[in-house]
Length: 626
Image (cartoon, rainbow, N blue to C red; front, side):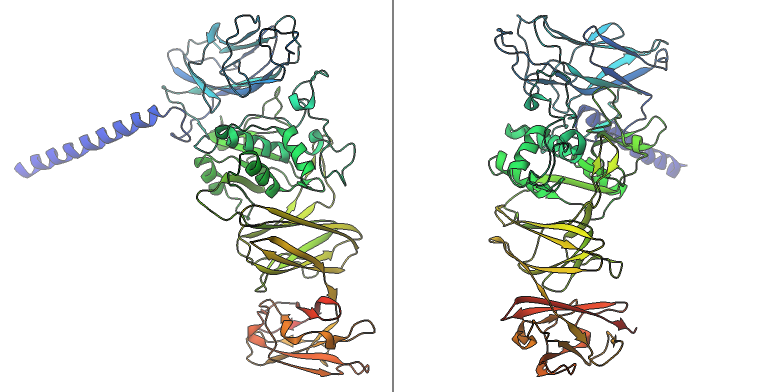
């Protein structure tokens, strides 16, 4: 009996400690009202979208608020308060668009406004009571507690210019009704790097013809590489990815006093070789961020194939907004936080630059069945990290295959239908892009290779035709200090045709060369009808570089030749007439199990240097045994 009493005392003490710790954690969590992801999100009972209305736009909930039940209203959104020139508005009227959020009237990205001379009216009314934000919230999300009375919730948003100012207001707020007991419920991202991103539109954010593109009327602004884009290529048509980046940079740059928008970003990219065709060079976006903030090290982080929900949630938990491709035709949205749908399904808040208009919010990935096919983002580097990177983009009916100094490959070989991802910290992607106006995918989208930590040395780039047409090949490299170097070349191709280029990369100087290789005939295991190789063999593979009427194989330096995926050097060489055409050929010997050829390989290549034609490359078909 005495033992039982002692046990009860011990158990009671333990439970008391657990309760006190839990109680403390509960209130410490509640105290961080708008910190990123401080509490598990609760389901949304209903979302109201309240557009701008000079006479007051009103929305009423479909569901009555239960009597006596406490609800949290999460209020967010973006609006534009129209332009007014200093002459017409002498008492401090804006000569540019003013952006706002649920904290109401703001100036140049959320400065306060208190000019007594203005007769403008801006307020939010909830069930007849004006809502006032006590202080500006950099996450642009505000909460309001409401006790249910059995009646639907009515929200009115009024935005009225002064009587002598332009009527070019635009925007909307969203009010999410969450049944709760004082909890903030949702987790919007915000951390030391990013504020909550402002909702930009790729379409013009005002319909007033009196507003210039740099004041929000940018939908018709020319978009893409000026050398290849046409008069109908505009931000509104193609600019979803660009607009997502503008939202990211605007949120990140705020702490440095830097703000941007789709118009400013597009203008800079067009002036600084920031497009390959109609696709944005994302590393150029990082350069723009670096240049505009006096050298802050902002890095583009490419899609590396990790399309998992866990990866996206990890980014949201870190407060990093992420660009998502939401269909297979190339529309992109910006994920800005985690939430749970009314049905109880986990999802993510998004800023949709086209379909999520200021008048018709579609605020979560539930609009796209929570499906995404790519994840891309940017972040600020810490310390003295290297900014070196290597990007290659191909626009054409062709595929892109890149081989590094060790024979590792990344890209696609359409002749074998094989996809490779062997180069560390490198990715291959198809930069799909959608014409958002006409809902049509861009034909022959760019194929891109991007390495965030490229090794110094030689890269072999193969353009392998999948159809007939012109192609343009662009390279963009940055040295360790973030200085760019770019090269471009044009050509034509047809199905099965291979164009091979050599890139010499240096993290000190960036790309130093981009050279077209001379393709030469190669015969693996001369004399065999079918070249069959046992990759595990300790024996030798004879490989002949054949002379032609226009090429002398004896001009090739044997010591420069590299063969197979492992870029193996020859163990011996000799000059012979291998094919009996009376011309001297170069015969090389390679150790089989050191070539990197693996079971299932159907083609193998070599490269080298000729004193007559420079860089050469040649390939031959093979079969392998296990």
